[in-house]
Length: 342
Image (tube, rainbow, N blue to C red):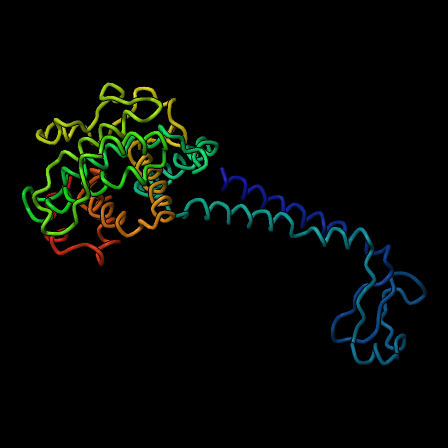
């Protein structure tokens, strides 16, 4: 189709050239002057007493003597025709350029196509969530995954079982449980957690704390669901990391991507495709804010970093990225006792 259009343009160019030659032949007598050969200095008039003869004495000006010949005076119509003489050729070249640009344009690979499609999906999703994805839209129910921080953290999901690194993850989960009466962003939860944790005094972190039992983390996890307005239970989720998952790897695997059965109770995380991750984000930021205000930043970091480094997200890639960013502050046991990732 493009080549046919180009051929038509060339034919039009030839036709216009012929018309231009014909018009020039007709308009030349009207101009009255024809251009003399380059070897002669005079001019031949189209009419008059010396018609058909060259007169060398008609132009003795300096311009005429130096130039050898003067530009003929063109008729306006002839000038217009010459102006548009090459328009079809220009159009033809434009068509050829377009054909080549389309034919030799680099083809997008399958990987690039999938990446572009994913990016468009994310942009569309971000636009749909724009009204409810800001920190100001976080509601107390968005903090439900503090429960999972405690239980999955205590499980040390990606750590080699019964290793020093695994014991450090359990230790960190117990310490977070003891900090929650001060750091939980929701006041009713702080009050409930204060009552629930009253019988579990603080235990210093370090190798001497290896005897810690799971009770502090378990008690705090249960209270972290009950204290929220939605009063979450295991039945509130399609899958959840329950107490049974601490002893059953198959149940733990099923809880890798929990979803709420009624996400309308959430705020900023209501439309999130990763409900637990969104809740982690909201919860950790809220607790960090209170930790800074209360001077508990260092204890909070000593608790939350090992929890995430041991696999609280239950995502192998996420855990590797977190460990790479925080490697300078990870203990040798936390680095060396990492197990298989999935």
